[in-house]
Image 1 (cartoon, protein in one colour):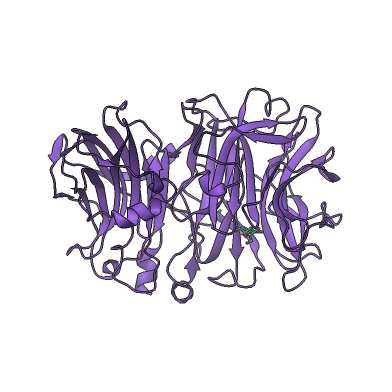
Image 2 (cartoon, rainbow, N blue to C red; image 1 turned 90 degrees about the vertical axis):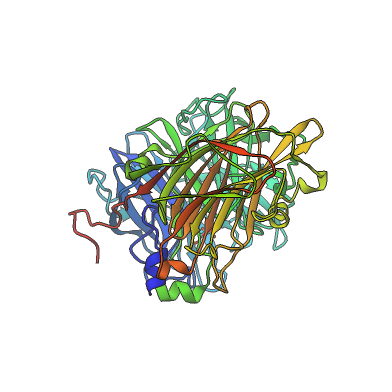
Length: 559
Ligand code: FRU
């Protein structure tokens, strides 16, 4: 349909057609980036979950060549689905994939398998073989069959043994959501630790765990997580869990000890260990099942995450595809030692084409809406706002702390405030009936300030049957100490609005389905609905070129 073509992403990764969900096994190997993903070769829905691993390769994480599926559900140990997993590069440079095999019908049974390249000398690692000795980890007796999955990248502890984490519900149907650790000497025989790395009474089941080390606070380089000796000591780690009840990814920063295989989070007074709702999130919008890898080429940790559709299944079947990946993001520990910062990998900037500079130094006064001419549905926008005075900030009520999303709903872009709401209107129709607002609002809390960031979808589309929530989160920064200056970067890609607030402290990804794109153009505006003026210190907007994706290795466009 025309709508399907218009909402298709131009630089957020997606296969040529059909369903994709979780990113799987990302790695950099012999000069090539690999991305595998949960893929249904037969259609645009998850279907019965009888999934394959799609496989694409790239030299820059932006432009992609499509390959045949790497894993298909053809063996007795994965006959009903090759589910999520990770890649590990073994000593000697041979990569291994660990993944979940689903066996049997109905809820089935989940086991962990390994696969290796058929020809390790093939620069693209096109074919993968699954040894007949699989599964390498059968279902444990105390785990209900359909609750054992998503092995992580393996790492080596000081004892020289491999370790992986696997998500499981332990102890019957009402068991406890756990992240189990297995150890192995040879990558084939795995033994479960008595104690899990982490358990939570608050979550029914967790999926897709990720454990990775981060460098010193404020240092943007990443650390390799699977070389002996780098995993413990004074280094901080991040534990990420995808929580099924809310379909959100949560993380904690803490200390991982590779002798006991324990993770001790470093909590502040706002975060409670057994209440994942208080944990920080990679993204406060619509992403799930994220996975990171260490990028040896640029010494950084890179995160991928799945952003599913939020229209409805009939639309997906009609357009023939479903699901995109966020742009790959560099991840590092903020100078405060508590939160992660994220930023689109710099290679994305190679797609910047026509540059539009708007409003340099302009004041946007109360009620102001300024059009930025020349950019629309495929754009990268970077703005720096300077709040003239924090005097007018509205008073913060403590009960708002746990529900910033509700606050964004009550105090949407059109509700005038003191300091803000100010920010961007993207994917706006010519008549402004449709627009997606990405904005900040600053509150006073005692003698401090609290910054709220929202992506308000309530006006994003005039269509019914699409999900149009307000997304919201606080930006953990001292706006006063920053001189009232706050940045916003928003990547607009037809149906994707991916925003990085406060230098990547708070990220919100939304999927939007405006009606106007079928016949009209989309526009960009800067707005301010606060009493006080806001200065736009800089605003750079680029029209983005379309990335080359889904081309065949020989350079032909895939049919
Ligand atoms: C997360 C997930 C994983 C599973 C895969 C199946 O979205 O449910 O736990 O391995 O998707 O497609």
